[in-house]
Length: 92
Image 1 (spheres, rainbow, N blue to C red):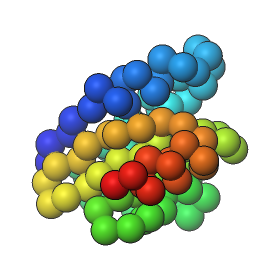
Image 2: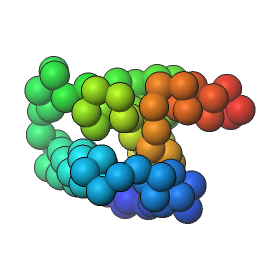
Image 3: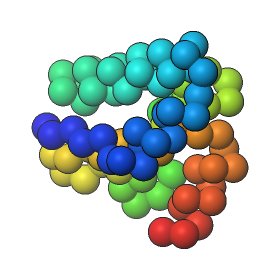
């Protein structure tokens, strides 16, 4: 399994305060560990398939991490709130 952090993801993370950045970092590490080890994810983690190969996982109540999962490649695309994720997907 390969993982890639897009420049758009890095830019979006910079807009958060330190506490939220740490939460985003933790949730991305958890996703990587889960996908590498084929572990089950507990239902409250907030992992959700949005459409096609696009998935999101929650980091706290408001923040979400959008990623694209296609075969053996996971691309982290954006960190933001519900509206930012929705706007991004509308453009795709």
